Amino acid sequence: MDAEYERLKSLIQNRYNTQDTFALDEYARFVNAMKKLIIRSQSSSSSS
Image 1 (tube, rainbow, N blue to C red):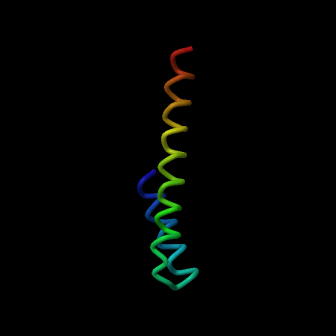
Image 2: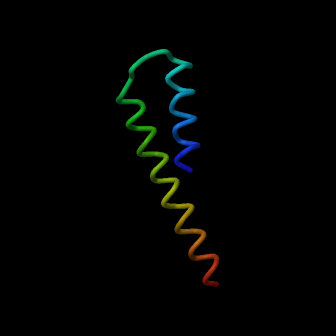
């Protein structure tokens, strides 16, 4: 997951060729939220 985040982050930086740290920070928050949802769904589905 972290490798995928780094890959996408570098892809975004290359695509827009900018140091838009605000957008990257928002994206990082989104990725972290998705990661938590995935972990939560995996743990709940394995317990059922």
